[in-house]
Length: 173
Length: 156
Image (cartoon, rainbow over all chains, first blue to last red; front, top):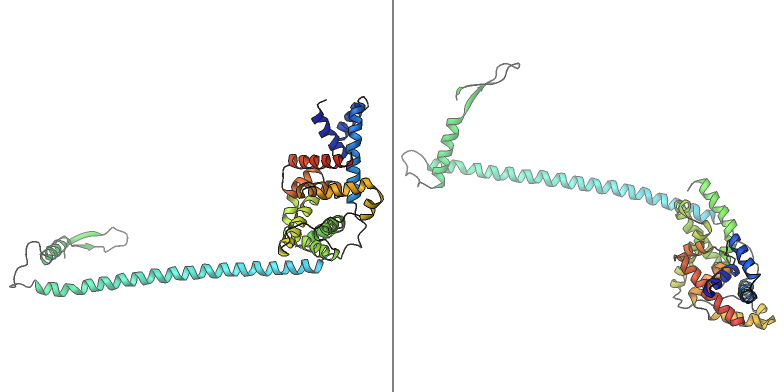
């Protein structure tokens, strides 16, 4: 047998890590090889001496099981779990409120802009009074007036006098 | 933690506690500190009871926790060297071979010595040692073989 392989097997045997069937086979091999047997004894002696050296004197005894400390630990963990749960709910509430406030203030701002825009119209309308100077071809006032005329001509009156029938157009307004 | 888990932990404490106390005493150097570390080990185990069912070996799982607890305590003390092993002086004095063995063990690199102790003193299997030290089983076997070869050379 290869020396390296034999040494590995002998050391596993000395350390008590060889499976029983492998141990039996190795013992049978060693019975026929005196040199390998001597080597096996050296490894066994080294392991035995080390075991003896590592043996501790019997200790004074095991201290009591820390049941109370474990109980307090578990209580603290439960309190932490509840706190985390509450913190998560509070965070969700704050985020939701923040989003809601942000969205509603944004709409209010746009409404104010529309009012400001609409509030400009009377000034522009009064500037386009009959008899006054005509606005330029590409002027904003002329384009606005034209758009109003188109919208007025497109407006249609709808007649819907019955809940069981569809609404129908009813002539110019 | 329910009553069943607590009972199981207490049973483990009685079964494995003495070996762990011995292991921690080697790491800590004195019995009082070792007892504190033992309690800390089981407090850590109580925090991770859900991992117990996934552990290949309960002994290895507890030893791994104990090792980490001892290492943390060591770092807090800013210890840079391992405390000398509590090798029985009487055994070495009676036999010159044992004196040589004591020297040889003391001269082993930390990694080899720790692995050898877990095998010869704590009687953990190769797989359990691998679990405790977080190394492959092949590395465990290699370390043990290197250590034993050095000890054999010291006796020859």
